[in-house]
Image (cartoon, rainbow, N blue to C red):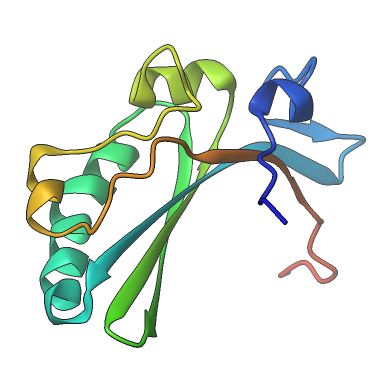
Length: 134
């Protein structure tokens, strides 16, 4: 069975950005990118992501967080970046007009086994903390 893709236009109709709904739940947009490297290049690629990609995300107005995930599977290492954004406009400032298109850096050619053409976006709902610090 083919993997189905979910598109931002289907998930975020009417979404206007980061807000607090009824004083409790927070809503953002999550952007997820996936890439693979040879296991021998994984440490160097992880350092590249920390030094080049993460600051690029963080310097974009409207970015609320960057998370890097890494998993070794046989001779390959899978990387996921999960970023949180205030709005579609914030993502456009980072990725360009077509936000479904993956953003790559010239250095990625030294590491990645392929260039996946798209990323995925989801609405992200953050539950309020159960306990507040006094």
